[in-house]
Image 1 (cartoon, rainbow, N blue to C red):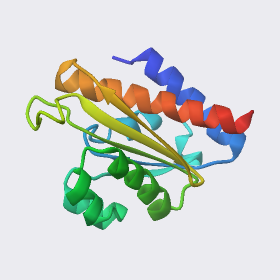
Image 2 (cartoon, rainbow, N blue to C red):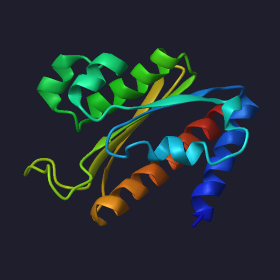
Image 3 (cartoon, rainbow, N blue to C red):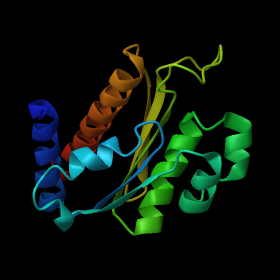
Length: 165
């Protein structure tokens, strides 16, 4: 079953990336490749999508995305600084203009009092200009993952809309 809204956002993202002459790479943890899946639903996405990294473990974040182990030790994997480091790390690792980083707790386990199930940080890095947002979903594991992908697409669109105007 095709999610028409997600597909429309992915198609618009592709148009904006092409219009700006930019490439995209994504780093995902809690979404497990869902953002890359959404981006590649669009025919011709190979024109602007360089690839993605699913870095579920801290070790993968460190090795594949160059996330500083000190950030992970101080802030934890589910944090604003780590989401930013993931976005920057994937942008640099794959040589893209735009990087997206998603880290969170999809659930149902893994929560702490400070970091509940559904807590997600999404960061966007466009040529070194970075922003991050915190979300708290309450839709169960699959719903939390879906909402995170939708939010990342919207953040990417917002970032590129500001650049292209």
